[in-house]
Picture 1 (cartoon, rainbow, N blue to C red):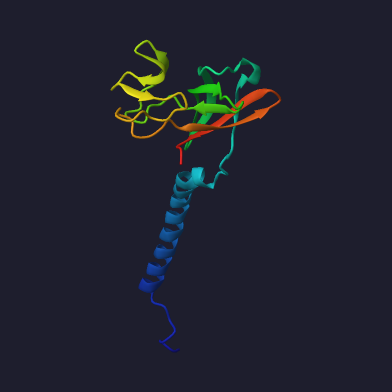
Picture 2: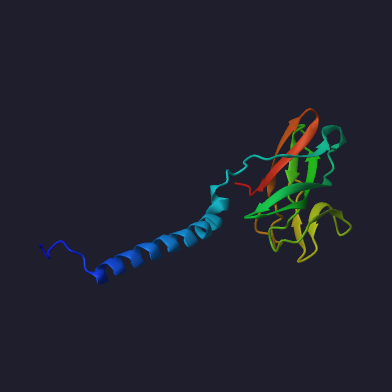
Length: 165
């Protein structure tokens, strides 16, 4: 018998334990890796719009409307109430703006007794014009974000709020 091709008992035991240990480690790690990357594998829902108000209720004066969206944060899903300032412009188009101040994230109000026909942020006296552009010399450095929106069947649908370009 030739000794060159024989595996010793020690090598056999080492190969067997390494193989079994590797198989067991893979069996334990596979579910953990799958659990960690599962949210990434789910298809993203793009362009979700939520019905907010009937078009007939909109005026040229900004009105605040609250609406609920389904928020998914990894494995946790919840309903979140959001708001928008919505009005019809002179040309008949609709403008929907986020009520979140671009300075510190406080909520802006419309037509405050201190500042008529302006959006006002009480946190640091931030002010915006009716169209949501920031007034020079006040804390906000950017205009209010605009919501993606569409009209279908006489109902206004809002999507995500996006910063102005």
